[in-house]
Image 1 (tube, rainbow, N blue to C red):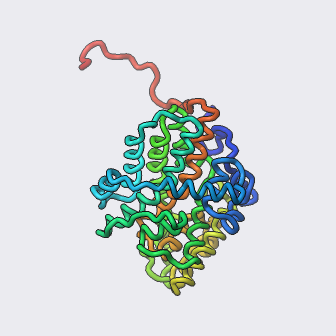
Image 2 (image 1 turned 120 degrees about the horizontal axis):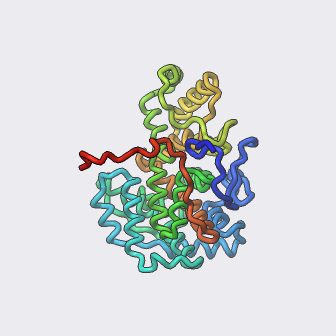
Image 3 (image 1 turned 60 degrees about the vertical axis):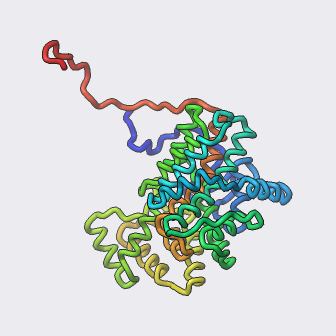
Length: 371
C-alpha cells in the first residue's frame, strides 16, 4: 500500500464529536450545525455539548457556568513564570503554563471520568487567565485579577483590557469561539489523541496540541493573515498585491482547506463578526481589503477563504495584539481537544501507524575501518 503524504484521505479512527460535510460545506457538532450554534447558542453551552453529547437544559447550563467560575484560580507560581517569559511568543508562554499546571497537579495520573472532566474544566477556565496575564506582562502592564461575578467572555475582556466592551463585541467574540471550538481530526486534535493514546496525562496532550496549533499552516494562520493585511496597507493596494503574490507563487495564508473544497462553512458567520467589528470601530478598511483579496483569489484561482481569513481582522479590530490571535484559538479549541481526549480514553488503542520505508536495504557493515 502506497503511503499518503499528510495522511490525506486516511480514516484514522472514529469519533462522535464532530463531522465536516464537504459536499454541503457544513460542519456539525454532535449533530448540530456549528453555524447555527454560533448564531443562537453560548460558548459554554457548546462546551457542554462537546463534552457530554447533548445541549444542556437551562438548569444544567447554570450549574456548568458556576463550575467554570469556581474553577478560575490565580496561581502565583504560574503567573511568575509567565512574567519571566513576558517577551516570548504567547503560544510558547501558554504551552509553558499548561505544562507547569500539570507539574503542580498531584492527581496527574488519575484519569477517571470525573477527574478528567474536572481537569478539562480547570484548563478551560484558566487558559483565558494565562493568556490575559501574559498579554499584559508583555505590554508592561500589571495583572488584573479575575472577577467571579463576570461571565466567561466578560471576565476575559476585563482581564485583558480592564474593561468590558460593548455587547456587539462580546457577541462577535463568543461566536468566534464557537466556530473555532472543534473541527474533527485536524493536526492539533490528532496530536492530542496520539499523546492520549499512550495513556499519558491531559496536560501533556494539551501542551502537544498547543505546539501543533502554533504552526502557520494550522492555527498560526490567523496571525499571518493580519500581518499580510498590514503589509498591503490599504484597500487600493489589495488587488495588485494579490496578483503579484500569485504570480510569484507566494504562500497566501487564509485561503484553501484540506477538507472544504467549495468554501469553509464557518466563514460567512465569522465574516459577519468582522463586519460587526468594523461598525463598532467605525473603520471599514480591513473589510474592504478582505473583500478585494477574497474576490481576486476566487477570480484567479477559484480558491475560497478559510476561517482564519476573517478571524484575523475581526480579532484585530477587537483590540488584541496579533501574536495573541492563536492563543485565542486555543481558548476555544481546548473544548474540542478535551472532548477528544475524553473520547480517546474511553475506547483507547495506542495510535501507532506504519510508514513506507524508502531507504537502502541490507547494507553490509565493513569489517575494517569501523569507528
